[in-house]
Structures are given as C-alpha cells and as structure tokens.
Length: 111
Image (cartoon, rainbow, N blue to C red; front, side, top):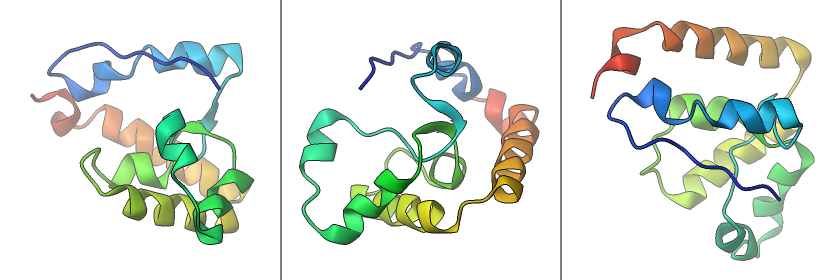
C-alpha cells in the first residue's frame, strides 16, 4: 500500500508526474499493472480478478496506456490479468517505449 497524489491540471502528461516519486521510493515499478484503491481491491471476489496480483503495480502498462480512467473496473482488471500472465522483459521495454512516445505526442499536452 502507498499513498499517491496527482496534480490537478488540464495537461494529462503532467497530472501523474508526482507518481515518479513512488517509483523512486520503490512503492511501484515503472512498468506494471494499474494501481487499485483499497475499495477496488477489496471488491474483487472472482479468482480471475486476482490474477493481476501476479504482476507488480506500475506507473506504465497496457491498462494505463490503452484504457481511459473512465473504463469500467472489469475491463481494467481483464487488461491487467492478461498483462500479468503474458509479461516479459521485451514487452515491458515495449510499454516503456510506447509511454515515451506518448509523452511527446500532441495529445499528451492538450486539455
């Protein structure tokens, strides 16, 4: 468990910049599954929903890079479970590269 905060800004790429502090402190990794709130974590009852626990929590990953925050929790859990079962160093490097490319895209800096 860790406490994460974000800035209230219209620029999406800057919103989660403070999460880098959690990466440096070792609470989360650079690449992994999306973090869940304690309430979201407690609400998981099905076995497939807990598969995501096989992977570390990370700042970047397929769920963070491809789904929106408005996506249903079930969709996010499915994406995380798939990542947890298929993860590898090569795929993690691919997600890092995808995140780096998105950092310099115009959409990342628009409101």
